[in-house]
Image 1: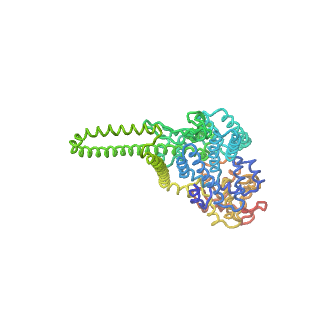
Image 2 (image 1 turned 45 degrees about the horizontal axis):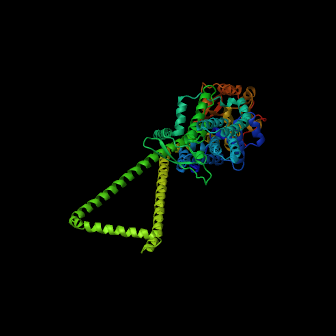
Image 3 (image 1 turned 90 degrees about the vertical axis):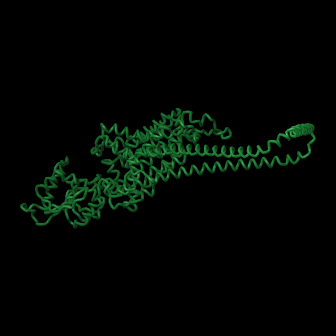
Length: 635
């Protein structure tokens, strides 16, 4: 996963949300604290972490590297969950599947908190597995760690608190004892209490998500393809493996992972082989048997994780729109776990079929060799029939005499007198036992080696299948690493501005949020004059700064003979109707006093040059006169 994340990490541009992270993280701690009182409180902890990351050498790589590391940790945690709930190769496959999923790679290269949230959710899930079966002296430690991780994850993004619902269903279907419910309840309550101040603050800032709409069927299909695979073939294989996992679930794991192997029967059910610890190890069959309540199965963990958070957010968003696919990235971990469990079932079926056929062939070969030997014996016996008949009488006499001698030897042995030659027989007996023991040990080693070889071959086959799936989706991975696959490309607009703007040129941002381009790339706007700016964002506790009112804006524009307008594509459409008086004043001033002369368009914005209408006077001076109280742009 780390290599996938580093591939194409530096794209030469940032999109709008990354630009916000980049600019806010470089503010001082008091300035960040002032900002969180007005906006973006839900990202406060992430901004604080990134403040220390970008403090030394700010740049695109440093901006996205924490997400890459978090995604790599998530893949490792998914592998650990699969190994604990099933077997090591299931964990290996699940971790590789997570790394090969395009959605995981997409957010691994984004300078936002979503990859970190996914890592926190996976870590909390793994801690939950340990806490459920922890010994009495370690329960408090495990549940404290669980509550702390859930709380930190929720503080990174408050909607990740839905993870608690998934874990609650896991415990419910697993029929855990009361002590587990008590520990989980205390940890969950502590996490919710820690999140409560942030939740109250975010309610006051709910206008930030006003752009969200109620999700529909298209959003559900998009999320399904994001979790299981955008490609049709990969999607079909993934869903098939998940169906196999649901149809023939892997056995539950007891407190000390007693269930370690399972083989499917011909009827499709799972025939589990339970390893019960002996009395010397201090174990009991009742404590480790999967039939006892409290065992966690892979399905009980993966299915609620992948289904419940998106489903609940979908339902809530029908009345209060909060849904976006990136907000439920942490639920992605359940999808590769299900697919890996299905692959384990398929591999078990294939291995059982191969072993059955090999045994059948072996029995057939043994019967063939026995038949050939019997045929040779019958052919040779027909020529000796007369001889055997003539010697029958002598053989019977010899057998009677040999029986008498054996009886005499038994009598002698009983009386304590050793028969002649018995010492040699006794000397040969230990040697025969040693030979038999060596043969048995060698046979066990050969059998164990064959098992290891088959296990390694199965694991390697799964790894090759995941690599093949990744290569099949390689064009999609490449496209994800281009600037065109992000919502916008601020770097492209900044490059145009750096080429066209001269020191002192007036710039008007339409709307004011377009100022994030100048905040992300201040060198490209060095010396430019921001016409509408009243106070910079870092000085006013806002994201994009404070702007002057309509009257002051009209006065400033009236003194200009030209102005550059950096506008978003939607802002120049006739249907755009802003609510802010300042934004309406910008549009009215441009329409009444200026005409466009040149335009440089990019897919996500326009840099347009407006000049004064010839019929209108410019003012007291022919050139632009800039008010002294407004500071120029740039650092």
